Length: 341
Image: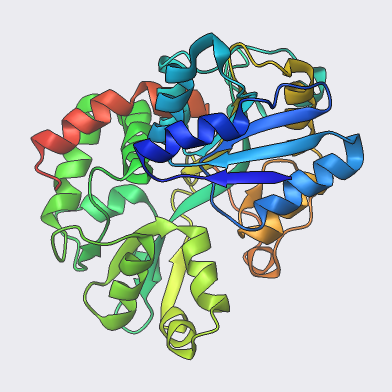
């Protein structure tokens, strides 16, 4: 396996030379916006199973989209991997993906994890949960995302900025369930209940709850698991001060987002690319997703991380993830109108 990492436009040009020769029958070229060491286990397992060597080029999602567009018909890219439906949708809108048909993916993946035209697929799930301070909050007071916007909410909220794709997809889901007017009312209510202007990443929101800077927070579940498992005692102690709530169990279920991938339009190794996507839906790959980054598998009855197992099963919102991308532009406009910074 060969990995090229870049983080600047100059490096894009340099990396093009490094990948120029990789369009062979026994190879696969993956452009990935996922930066987890555990993903190398995915590539190694695929090679072991198929004999196909995997070449990896890493960058952020926008860099990868720009690179593929610049390379045009000469692009060696076979697969693009990224996180969040919003980013997958942006890549699709940029013409990055081609539609594919696969009986394996149709059988293995739930409808909500498949693009309607087979342009991309979700292979891991990320629950956007609510966190509460165990000392200051009665968890029975909070059961839904809608509760975060209540006029009579006695608790303050920490949450990331509006330019965060995870929050954009959460608001996109609110648009789908409540319409634009209802979603905007919700967003305004959350802004009114914020303990502070948005700052930091998901981990910072959870730590804000632990420190007492706020009573409630919103963050993806695996950030919390990382704190629980941290080598730093301070992180573990902070996590123990915080409880987790999976919202909306009485109606639509908790909002989940994805790590996903699609076959690049014009992929020189298209057959290998489809085999790779089918491999990502296998029990082997699903267990690596679940153990490597503490994500939820999308395939039922796959072994999960022990912490996730301890939480049991919960109801997930089964809205098709493509909708989260389609509603993304409206979500951004709503954030601007309510001054969610």
